[in-house]
Structures are given as C-alpha cells and as structure tokens.
Image 1 (tube, rainbow, N blue to C red):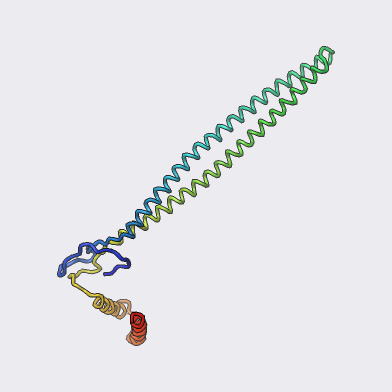
Image 2: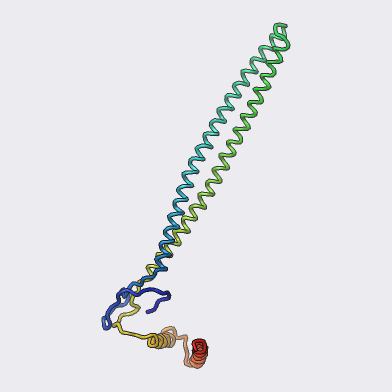
Length: 231
C-alpha cells in the first residue's frame, strides 16, 4: 500500500490484525487537498453568483428593451395618425383654394403641416427600427453571455468534483486479505519486486527468463546513478 502525496496517516489497524480485501485501512489527511476543495467550492459559489447576477441584469435589460419597442410603436401610431389628419386637412384646404375661398398662405401652411407630419412618421419609424434591432442584438448577446457564464459554472463544478475525488482518494483500502505487519521501505521494495515477477511470469506471461539480465543491468545502472547523486 502506498500514496503519491504527502499526507498525515490516520488510525490504522494494529499489527497482527487481520484485514480483508477492500476493507478501509486508514484515512489520510492533507492540508493541500482540503485547501483545493475549499478553493474549488469558493470558485463554484462565485461562478453561480455571477450567473444569477447576469440573469437578473439581463431580465431587467430585456424588459427595458421591450418597453422601448412598445413606446416606439406607439410613437409610430401617433405620428401616422397625425399625418393622416394633416393630409385630410390639406385636402380640404386645396378644395377651398380651388374655389378661391382660401388664401395661398393658408394653403402653404397646410402643405407644411403635412411635410412635418411625414417627417415625424419617418423619424418614429426609424426609432422603432432601432429599438427592434437593439432588442434582437441584446437578446443574442445576452444568450451568448449566459452560455459563457453557464460554462464557467460547469467548469467550476468539474474542478470541485475533481478536488472532492482527490479527497475521497485519501481513503486507503486493503489491496488484499491478510494480516497487518510492519514493513520497512526496503522490505516493501523487495515485496514489490517479487510481486512484479509473479505477475510477469505467471499472470500476464509477458516476462521471460531471458529478460532478467537486461532488467537487472538497468536496475543496477539506475541504482548506481541514484547512489552517486545521494553521495
């Protein structure tokens, strides 16, 4: 049984106690692992808060854009009504002018009123078109931003799940049934070698006797290098 990180070993079965395969032997404690879990949880909370804030802000913006569209439509309707009234007035004034019952200046005023009403209609329609464009663009931008925020939440959740799994991996289970004994690092290494030989020769059958000289030579070279470095 080994570990690939620095951690504090919890309570373990007493020497001589029998354990079964898969039995929980001990739980390691690691400050770095716990810190990773806390940081991942904090990042997830922040990502969720940002997503909620974005949704609230977008809902408010969408309501404002919708209100602008409604207001612009109302302005168009009023402008078109004013134009229709001005056109009817002009038509009547033209009939009066035709029989000499209206002055030229009064007719010119009626024509000017129609021109101004038409300009108001054009302006109101342009405002409506702009409001509709802003509504569509805003909705598209909001959707993209929400997808980005949701992706950030998912990434934060994945990070938390990974950190939680690392913490769960701190539990050490018995790889086989047997009796607990005190094994030094050297004895453990020897057992590992014997275990590897058994697996190689009798289980996978990928290891041959002819492979041993090369393996021993390589092991000797590595040991010599490590010894030289340590010395």
